[in-house]
Length: 160
Image (tube, rainbow, N blue to C red; front, side, top):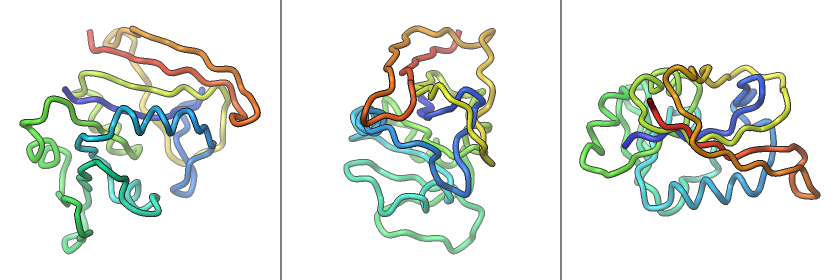
């Protein structure tokens, strides 16, 4: 199963200047719980936005840079090669960025989306979710609080 996991604003904003636009601790906890122990596929810029590789996950980095290397990570030149690298896995996660999400929308089986109920100025956006192709199977609303500046919902979509 190929699962796209993303935190997305109401206007599909993902980030600006290679940084997240919000800080939602419960989203980070959910991301960690869902992806730990699995392969995570991402573009180079997304990987470089982390202070260090995420623990207990196998990182596959997609880049066009010929000699790019990072110890402990798998580096490939395309989404197809990334998926081939982990083809025997039960579930793999695509974690960004915007271009990798666009490339993977037609092949993903599931979307795990944290919908941030706010609009943001951004330079990177998530593709539109086509409800003719996706069924919303779960949605859990969380109001803003002292640790979360924005209302948000955990949403799961399954391909029709």
